[in-house]
Image (cartoon, rainbow over all chains, first blue to last red; front, side):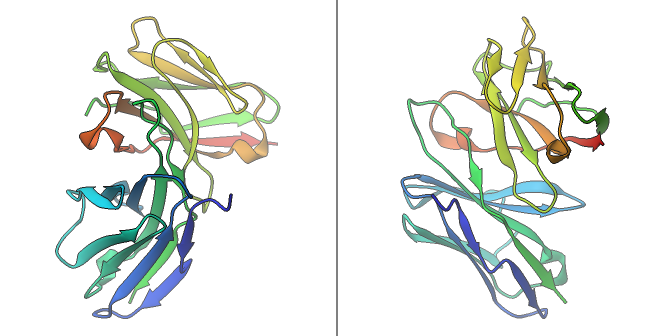
Length: 116
Length: 114
């Protein structure tokens, strides 16, 4: 298995531009998570989906951020308009429910976003 | 969420065992103890998890105190590749709802000396 795939790996954009980050979870996984990591705030959960449905978006910083999961093999995180404070590494992770016990999450390599 | 406390950093020598401590005095009866690690410039990866009994896998061992208020991640022979930030995380074992969230703290930065 290729693991969780994220694209692009690096993104540099100017303030005010729209940014779209993409994630392909591991096949068969039914949970998908978006995290953001900065030096100041560490690793934060932004939103997660179960069977393509958003379950908890309480970590989404503001309305400029939106996430979708149109099918089981694809999710996007969009920032519009982007701001310099959005600069961070964004990770996507997936996991699966088995035996009604939490199981491990598998993280992608991350997208390093720089907003100038 | 129940909180965990870890040392900011630890140092080890290659080929020696490493014991990474984690305190979680407010742990509830249904909380699982998870350990993840994050190697430089990579996403976090799962290491091990347990509930009450000690656990072993190919990566590490997890020793859980009898009162469950602390745990220790044991790397039996540290290698240079084990240099990473290690996160101790509590997650509720009751299925559904918000219980699949991972709340990462600052973790322990492990340095392995050659």
